[in-house]
Length: 103
Image 1 (cartoon, one colour):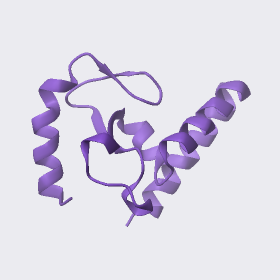
Image 2 (cartoon, rainbow, N blue to C red):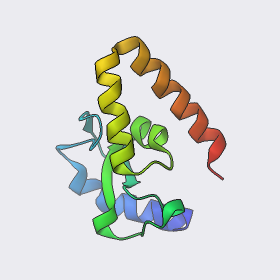
Image 3 (tube, rainbow, N blue to C red):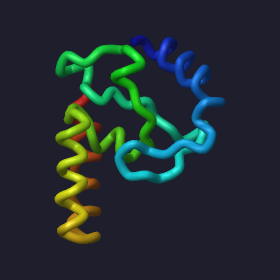
Image 4 (cartoon, helix red, strand yellow):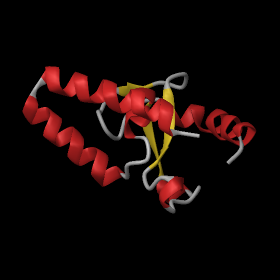
């Protein structure tokens, strides 16, 4: 999907986003803060189809990177057990790695 197509899709979805929540962390997303996440990343064979798209907050989408939905949710589950310090540290590292990994 091109950058222009992504902007068009996001503008089309904006009214639908009202009263919605991030699939991963549960934070409320707003029309100006949501991301469309590919639950199975395109880089791993996922498709640009509705069944593969989910609403997420931008921080979760960046941290998820090329992990699939199950892998990222498993990591979040482990981090809940470890506590806030570990969670914040690992999430920051995932976000930083995502910035450098994505082409």
